[in-house]
Image 1 (tube, rainbow, N blue to C red):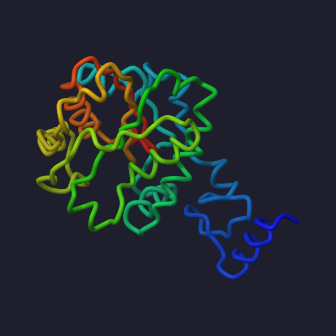
Image 2: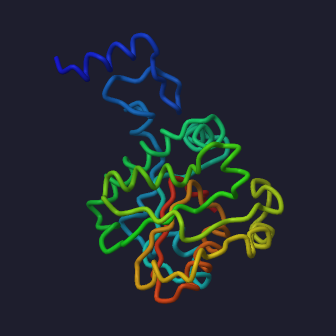
Length: 234
């Protein structure tokens, strides 16, 4: 028996890991999700039609996008919401990394990542990141980087605080709430001519990725794609 397998089994015996969705004990070979919850995760399949899916259409005419996808449909009262909720609010950055890697491995056969030069995690405001201890989008991006080898560009755009939380705002209020909150760092010469993949945890109305994308476009000659773990169906 391999040493790492022995220690993994011993650690699981002492401190069992639980599925973030159903709460059942994970097998040694499982991470974050048990096989049953992984199988039943409401996947979007958007990676197979990365410019004509509903999430992409929501961004049409707002920012130019080349590919748009999300792993699963997010609903506020469904069990899979715990993936996002525990990642953001229960101090589990590893969920983002594992799910980002899993999503990337699933999407790679579709060619979704071909030609992408860099990953831009949608940044948090400094105060929010200090409170949380990490940026959940950056954790997702790290998992994608592990699977694809695409570098992360986390110093190209910054973010000021929201005027108020986005959670209970409607589409148009969300647009107003994110207007002007992102700022390009420097003159953008380090991303000019590149195809960038913006990564967020959940896309609801698209207001946040649109605002971030508009700022990235100021660097000139930039192509944009968008990827998130969750997408709120409309």
